[in-house]
Length: 306
Ligand SMILES: Nc1ncnc2c1ncn2[C@@H]1O[C@H](COP(=O)(O)OP(=O)(O)OP(=O)(O)O)[C@@H](O)[C@H]1O
Image 1 (cartoon, rainbow, N blue to C red):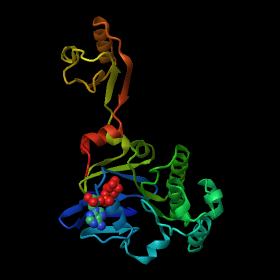
Image 2 (cartoon, rainbow, N blue to C red):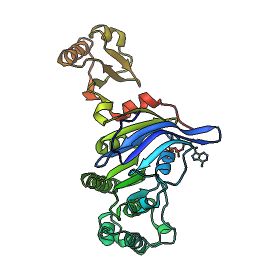
Image 3 (spheres, rainbow, N blue to C red):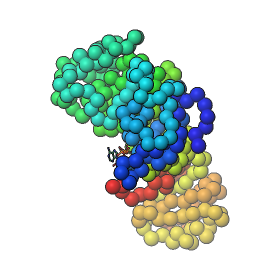
Image 4 (cartoon, protein in one colour):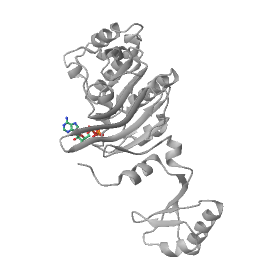
């Protein structure tokens, strides 16, 4: 269960079915103001469905959703919530600059549309119809449309998918500023580095349910792992017998070795001594913490989703 609180988004026991498929299957979490909440999950996990219910575009079968304390369908929310859908959201024939100015005109104290276009590198495209923009330019315009009204809450569905590195960084900067201004940001992403970098709270969803949630640091934990490359087929069992009880050692893929457990100076010395005594050159030897991607794959598996 999500903790009680004054969440900008409060989702409790949400269910949405399409025929026999439960796209969302009893999902609960809260997203707070001034925080970035990232929903992660394999394709088809139910992220977009959840977001679209929060945006008032789809209706839940059961459960409750409160957005800024209101029902998602409440018209009053339109001025207070920014939405960047996974694709589109802007009429194909609308010119970028005109459309952004139009959206800005619906709001009481919008950002300056020209400055926002410039910031997102779209000044030269101001007169270009949306359907003629490149994929990345369309994404950037959708982001501009979502934030131009100075919303209290924004939903960003895969905001950086398909963006070049410059545009990705510009997007991250903007998200950071929204957060600093007290805006609640709820985003979905398939980029684990993005979630690790941006999110205060990560919610990992699979088959319409939450399989883990917490800050990136909480999810990745304090444990370290040791990796090195060497010739394939080293005696991993023998290496393991030299390590403290509770350690694990494996070769995967061939020639890549991973040791997990209590990685401390003593263990490091044992591994390098073992390598030296076996004439093994441990290349790229490094100690690292588990990444969000490691945690994600552990929780959701490695098989492809339909
Ligand atoms: N209108 C619909 N009719 C039937 N099934 C649907 C409909 N919309 C979504 N689904 C199904 O619901 C499930 C969840 O889809 P959803 O788009 O929410 O996943 P997602 O986590 O956003 O995936 P992705 O990462 O691929 O964007 C999928 O199995 C999808 O095929």
